[in-house]
Length: 119
Length: 415
Image 1: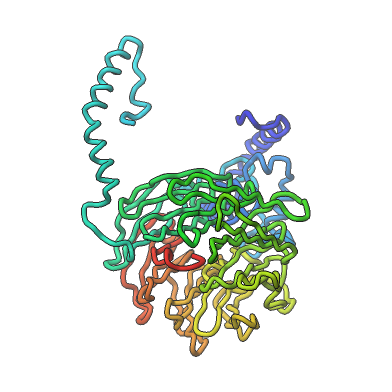
Image 2: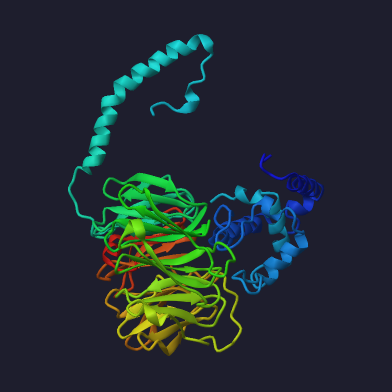
């Protein structure tokens, strides 16, 4: 574990990992096909990456690493993805993504699964 | 060094023996290394110019390919350039060296002739672009984190100046975008969070002068400079218009142009920011990508009035003029990024449309415009088209290609 991570974040991460393993079926994709999961990760890296960085360390948009998201509720993050953030360049993705796909992306981001995509 | 780190993990008794072998090996190949270094410094075996060279950024693998446009081939790959998402490049005035600006704050100097990385400095945590000075001696990089501009010696990449982008209202450091070079050894750039344009005069690098223009509008997201070096224009994401500074008459300050071009209508969701560097002056007018609209705006320079708009396939990202100004080629934002349209300038009509493949990220014309090179990211391909017949001339593999930069940029203001 990252030694510079503040204790609250570490706790949150552990909590997240636990939740993730408990909800393993949901995390494993549920009704989202394996192919679609790859597409979502590709979208995240290449297209979200235009603003948030290929490695998600941030750019014009905020960094999206697990440590940056740990204290933010899933529902709020899904809302941001689907509705966008008015007054900023973050667009609403509801025209291109389903809510369950946004939820899946949030889980992937929070657990750091995003880096597993093969470029 | 010679060996790899992992190959030598001997137990205690073996150490002395292996170490002496290593030394012997190093002594043995030293002359070979020296000869290779001498060759690299002397340049390639065949003497050639640089005018038909260029590079293709491979964004996901931290590499680039050196290409040439006479035979239309790839000459080789240079690796180890870091995170190249949104990477861009400028050239030394002799067209031999490219300066690559990476997202991870890396500034890399690449020798196109020897096809090797000369030097790389990681100069910030997060950067977005750069420019080279009029005299070719200074390279400036605009940074998101920490927000500001750093200026380097183009030869050594030693730091010459650090300009933190401290907002005039005291709200802190701002991300910097739209960095361009201007005549008079100047760099012009925009402060994204603070809504300001700054002009840095590096006539005397040891004592550079800053002129700041606050309150230019909300969220400038990119900037361009006209090819005569006179006008600097910042696109505003937070407002329905653009901010313009006349560098021949800086005392007039920054003026708003194209105010209300969106006619107050709600923008479409913008899945990718337009790039103004690909702006196009063609004939008597300038073509600009509209933000959040399926339109290219036609603007008259000088008066900066809108004289028309052309409906296009999607939200334009680049609207680039063929060097003779007869055509403007346009690519589009996600999810309509598989298409390219060609506008015929005299008639202002779209005369050609084609689909090179998913994620067309960039287009670059050869200096006289007979070919255009197109990167098709998701197909891992760079395609070359004839701009008169629209026939594909060739295609070559590239790993997630994005920006294509030809050495002709070395001789153009603002590129």
